Image (cartoon, rainbow over all chains, first blue to last red; front, side, top):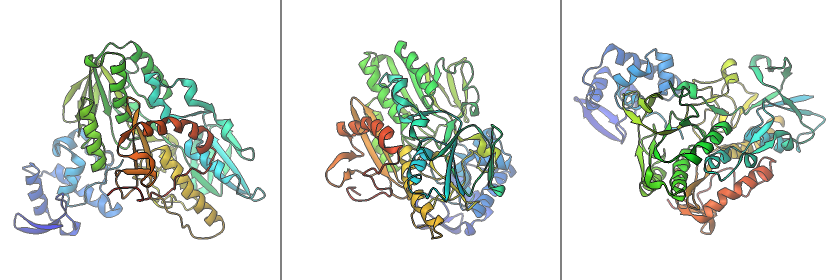
Length: 105
Length: 409
């Protein structure tokens, strides 16, 4: 575990850059992490996804799969990939301040 | 008379019937098993059919051969499970009551989930090898194929037997070499995973094998659609990959009856306690094999280890004792790597595949995460063990829980 400063906000991250405590999450942190991920602006549509992920995490203890995301949040798959290029489930989880989704095998 | 109802007589359901039938008191318990199909397929054998190693006959037997005589067997589709009333409605109109329900309805490929996959190219130059129909059609096609670009694509995780796609490309490399056309075939492995496999050490080892065998790896690829007229697949990010022959592992989903009964997640897999195999919603329902939503492999070996655990726990429950046996996610997979060799992996929820010897520490005869001829013999011998021992519920010399003995960390 390491503590780094994102935009002068102190927050604990694991070795892959995910928040270790989702309670430390704020919108400012989301914006800062999104910037690191190459997403310059977080729009309302981004926050539809982020809010859904945080709600899911609180209820189930894990982030949703992409399939669950599109079915439950109302954001179509195509848009999801446009909002979070290169891996919506993982990137959105990091920006939403929750654990990395469990890879299944 | 108490009723134990088992839905699904595939690998998991059949093993469970055979384990419980001899020990449950016949004056107290009636076991009933329901399945819609009369033929049992040895699914690991589907991989070998396209390469002419197995024929249809090698992978089929009547299900009836594997049920003990005291069990009530019903061949019918299942309309609906109604857990609040402890009953199951069958397609043939029958209503079955149960005290305990085991759901072992498995998982199947759903090519309809990917746009264009089941279109004009399906079973023409697009094939699956997860069904008997797909592997037989592919065998015919490969026999006359003169070469080109073979693309194997995994649509979405999780899939049944996550090592089978790797085995398919390893065997392809061998088969095309044998046919004398390897120089005319380009092989590309296209996966949504970040590497050749999920767990880091195995992913590295398998990645090196792909390299060595001159198979290209494209990772983090999420297919959106197939354009069969153009012979290309397209990702959600509009990345196109062209093919002459597409081998698809379509989206895997649980049985539609799970959806009709409101028991599943988005993929119709049933939320299940990862240690006890009890349904998360209903105390008298247990789930085993591919039908669960557990983060373990969907594979016969896993179903086998789960059956051992559920057997112990079920006997505790009917004696009004707490469940003590815990499933640890144990999986054990023989991976054909071509040219008469194989690789073996053994792992669970917490421990990734590691190198070492198996099952006897330091001795083997099998080697973990290494390519040997002995591992290949293990795989080929397994078909006999499956039909003659495993399905019949016999004890195998492998513990249900994974052991660290013999593994090098």
